[in-house]
Image (cartoon, rainbow, N blue to C red; front, side):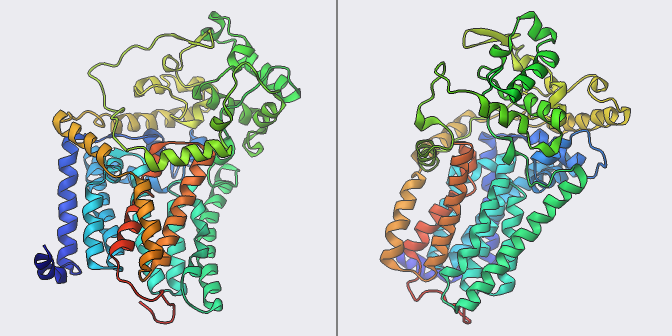
Length: 532
């Protein structure tokens, strides 16, 4: 093997090798597609809606525009508008191949062996390829983070103010793909990993931070000018499912009165005699989005859902549904548990969005805490939540998520007409997604690989041991990349808890750091004075 490697090593850093890697990754994608048919990913309908509403002066989906950010809608919507689901799947295959190449090129800065090992490992790492077989923000974020990692390494090895401006722009682009990645603004500390004068470090950090702030801030200004809300994404202020106790305080009384008048008077709720106490007891996401819409209608978008937040603050401690401290979002125990899940649980494809031969008819009611309530899967989007797009829909059947008569929700005929146009296009784009047949044998093998592949925590242990032990050239860039990836996971663990796909874009950093630290070229710390 050593003799073979010595004969081939000089080929690794050639353009021909890069082209072969891209073609191999592209071919591997289509082999995996036999077991993982291309399907709709999380929130794909809303990203399609966003793309179709991007240039609407008065969109009927205002909240879609304020809850989402533009990069994923453009990345998904542009191929769909050109060639439908087929063009989108080809685009995802290209994204996958380029992402593998980006990580490999970043590893090439450490050694040629590292470049080969990183490429080979990522090609068989299930969590790396799974997102690209779904239409969602996961694949776009993964593609963006791979380019950011390449930019970070090259900037660390050959730093300059211009390179840090470009790296900051890359961080901003990922933040406009998935808002939580705004935490990458912390990358202004990357210059501390580079041997240079303090003046140079300061200028590089400022260049990076100004680039991030300028681009992200520009988009928040667009939201202010178009929709009256200076925000990157309203998800950051929407909070969690609120706990409301009727009559607990002035805001609770006001919110209860609105719900009693506008919600519980509707036939599905009136027929089951749903009381305010039952309605607010453990609400579903369907009702949560309705309550967000109620808060907006009551006090305006600029209120930041204040009515819900004050009503929740008024609620006294509850003994009816005690929640263990370690499971409460935002607590140290919950954050620690979520972080452990992110680095330990295997990634696998559940194929939840593959379409069945016939959609089952949902039950009209569900029982929550012993009380009957209308089943969200059997309800159409509520009038209060219609501007949120498909977010409140509890069904995977798109027909149940679209109003047949939007004029009941929109008094403006032009907006009702635009609603029909947008939802009709979304339905057409969605039709072929998830209709492919899965090769069962191959799907099982891919599932097994997911469970036998070394977990991320093991790669992190290897990196933690090898970084101080071998002191490879450019180890500071590896530490910076791991630190930024950790901050992304920490923010997700704090705000939403454990959601497996949120970790996919940054997990390759653990593999990358472990391999580069283990087989990278040992040498002096990277310098900023012409080093490279």
